[in-house]
Image 1 (cartoon, rainbow, N blue to C red):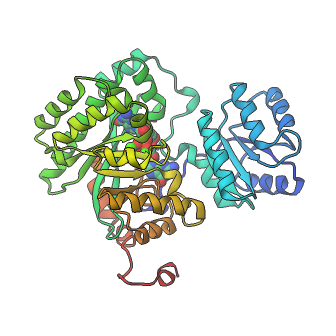
Image 2 (tube, helix red, strand yellow):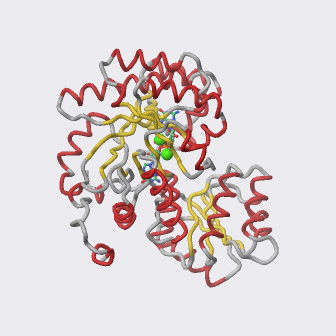
Image 3 (tube, protein in one colour):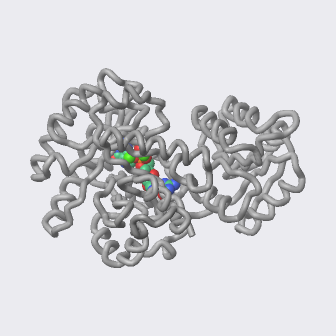
Length: 421
Ligand code: C2E
Ligand code: CA
Ligand code: CA
């Protein structure tokens, strides 16, 4: 499937635009109307938005919030929404400098709210469409959110019934466009409910003592898939996500090494991805598990790097083999100076520490080119492919050879201007 033929995730049915400038509000309204959004509500300041939310029969699907407003500004509005337990996905929009927008993005996430994007004004159709769709981007095909309702027992049964399966997202050599590995991402194919995304059921598994079983099930399937591809001459490194809840388990390391042996997969073909924040939060326990995994020969990837505030000193002391820069520093980096500085310094540091560098969430060609320029080893994201069932991957590789070739870096030594031209 080429990128152009990918099905577009659905847009929300309704939005609330909060902006004090009538002109800018009308512009945002026009863009949303062009996108076919049916219900577009407007408020000219934070307090009015709160009143409107209290009165609307159905909450809007997304809030588009300007930062600078008289009275209650955008920051205060977001804080108020969180205090009231309103968790509607938010797009922050402002004509102010990007570090300020990014500070508000970080604040919004830290408050536990769902942030779709921080956008620099003037807003355009593509920007808004991609931000609005990002909610469903990772969940193809999207289950209808209203229909997702399950208990921990349902999930337990589903794991036993093999309804929770990995899909695989390719990781490509950024310079050559050649596939080097995949990341296994859990999906719950629940009969009658479509595909339930991991963000919905992993927390339930973690809170109900099911994460050990779920991870072993995903890792078992991933090993079986890797073994099958190996037999066909497709040797790909296989990345599997580890929950922080497994980092203080005594049994876990033994259980997974038994599993990889059972499938005759060498430890160095598997990479365990562990988020930066979970390592920092459990440093003592995490280092024990990481050291044991590394002693067995597995690769270790520091996932979502840049979101967990680890210090460089901490990082240099941890036995990681790979650093995966969080997509919030990758997506749009070609356009935003601030992101570019962070991305480049993370990649420089990781290269100096001899780590494999991975950029996740690459959606645009200009960001991919930037990664080539900065010497990032591997890239992953919708620009290359969305996660797909294992049996589709060889077909995808065959039918996308041209697309993958187009991701090949230009001749060595080309100047920056030539490459950007
Ligand atoms: P993650 O480990 O950061 O995985 C990357 C997520 O980004 C995936 O979402 C992937 O589909 C999505 N993604 C990939 N490329 C792009 C892109 O270009 N743009 C955007 N916007 N998104 C992209 P997914 O599959 O929904 O997984 C969400 C999270 O759920 C994962 O984040 C991971 O933390 C967790 N997860 C998934 N599978 C497992 C699992 O087996 N075990 C555990 N413990 N966690 C899992
Ligand atoms: Ca991951
Ligand atoms: Ca990640």
